[in-house]
Length: 297
Image 1 (cartoon, rainbow, N blue to C red):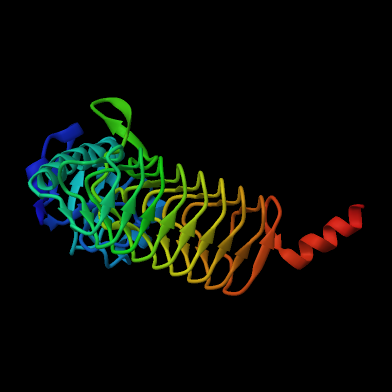
Image 2: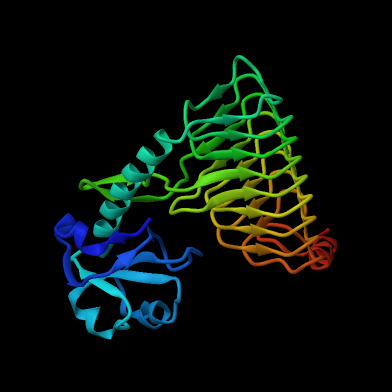
């Protein structure tokens, strides 16, 4: 669905300089086509102009002339606030779309009577099992042969704040969550919806231990093992066959290559190459970590 920028004129002081269409709100890092982004600093003008995903920009008046002519452009004293107000209106549109989407629950799926399934906008595939007190929100798609244990929550809001109606608020979500076939999530895992569109995705045969948190827009590959109390923060990308140890933290936006290993308690603040192992807080190559431990003992 496309939206005309001029439809939002006046929100948070928004003035349209050059009208046009966009698909969704987003940030510079949002990997969706046709996004509308805020620009509040001259330092990011070149990055905006070089981003093929961007269709519309909300900025300050002094930056408008430096933007590529292909963009729809609007100005506001506070571009972030205007962007958040547009996002909130798009969320209302998305919620109406979900409310008009009936559930698709395969008759072979086993859903415990104590589970809570949203009354609309949910897909559950064949032979999937959903346990007691699990909660599945609208916008969640669980494919076939998945196992969702007790207390798992799929489709919670992601932690991303903005100013809506003059107050700090958690941004509403436009996207969803998707579990690919044979995913299994143990008790009390929590998975957030994508914020601007698309899906937080967990790949085939990935397994998550108890009390794992997977944040908004995370993309997880096939046959990943995620141990208890791990936190994978927003927009992280996890390759196939990765191991994430107990209580590990993966910083937002990072990439972990195929078959990487994050050891127990590691706090990962940089990308991890395919096949590499990291340890420590902040995490470094595992061999270097062991050398350091030996040096201080």
